[in-house]
Each structure stands twice: as structure tokens, then as C-alpha cells.
Image 1: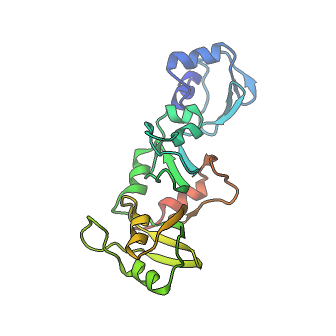
Image 2 (image 1 turned 180 degrees about the horizontal axis):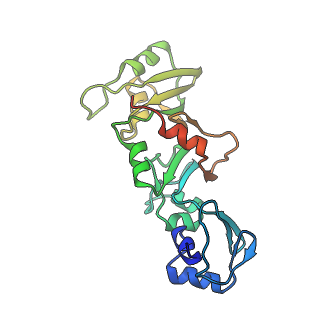
Image 3 (image 1 turned 120 degrees about the vertical axis):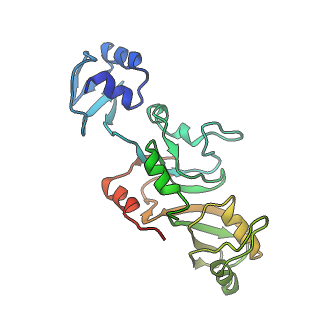
Length: 237
């Protein structure tokens, strides 16, 4: 594949802009300078730099981000900065999207991709990918509340009941709540339905993928092959 096409596919601007980057000596390939935008390379696993920043070719983008509070999961935020400000411009240029959204005050694990099939697989209600939230509550959580969350609660403006897959008590005021749905403000509404209140909310797991301990708030990284297999091999609930 021509170098300018490789750069274009990775989000480094228009074809003309990528051509200019190469001709202005802003690109190295496999550690060597290259000023020919039409030079051919095998893109698989190709390592290159753009303006001194190291990159590796990825046909599709599969990312994880540890979302901080006071960021919105939108390309057009209304009240707070966008989580896309935490990503390199190239990833935004290639139209990476959040897979599901976290409220602006919710932190933790979020996945992003530019692969429509993967986005659908991870967000479709048919698959019901479980997500685990660490919930800090205003009042201590008792056995009756845990039982009600698992059996199901009635939410305002909802038909039927909404139930958690699991609810594990970590301490008096901290629970791990597992959900297979993504209703609006669901965790907050479920806790309100059992006469409690959410004081802090963090997503710590999607499917079998845990939020890594070494991924600080505001940081992102590529998903590994093992993590991708972990996410896509699960069967429907």
C-alpha cells in the first residue's frame, strides 16, 4: 500500500495532506526517513512516526479509555469537554466512536472503535453484554436493598421491572452492580428505587474485560488481541 494511503487510513488528514507530511520529512517508516508518498509498504504491523510520534498500523481502531469525571461522551459536548479531547487527533479524524456512553459524572472503562460491526456487537440489546459498576452510596446498603436490586425494581416511566444480574457488597457504602442493559441514568434510578442515592459511580468491567489498574484516569490504549477475543467470544445472555 502506498505510504500516503496508509497515513490517510490512519487518520492523518486528507490524501493531499498526508502527501505533504511525507514530502516535508515528517514521516519515518520502520525507523528510516521516507520522503516518497508513493513508496509501497506492507501495512500489517507497520511501525512509523509522524512528527516524531510513534504509531503502528491498525486496520481498525479498538481502544479502551479510563474516563475521568466531567467529560462528555460526545463529539458535540454541551457543558463539559469531550472525551475525544483525550485522544490523539488522528483517532478522532478516523471517526472513533464511544460504544455506549457514560454520564458526565461517571468514571471508568469505556470502549471506542471505528468498526461498525464491533460497535453493534458490543452495544446491541440482543447481546446484553454485562457491565459492572462500582457504586458508592449515600446510605449503607442492606440485604433488603440487595435483594430488591436483583429481583427487580420499578423505575419511573418504565414498563415492567428492571433487575441487576448481580449485586455484590464490597463495604457498607460500596457495591458492585452488574447490568445487562443501558437505560438512561439506570444505576442512579435503580438505587433511588430502593431508597438510596448514588454518590460515586465507576464502570470497572465490560464483559470479561476489567479496567486495568495501570490505566490512569484520562489515559487510553489499544485493546490487545487477547482482550478483543475476550470481548467477542462471549455468547448471548
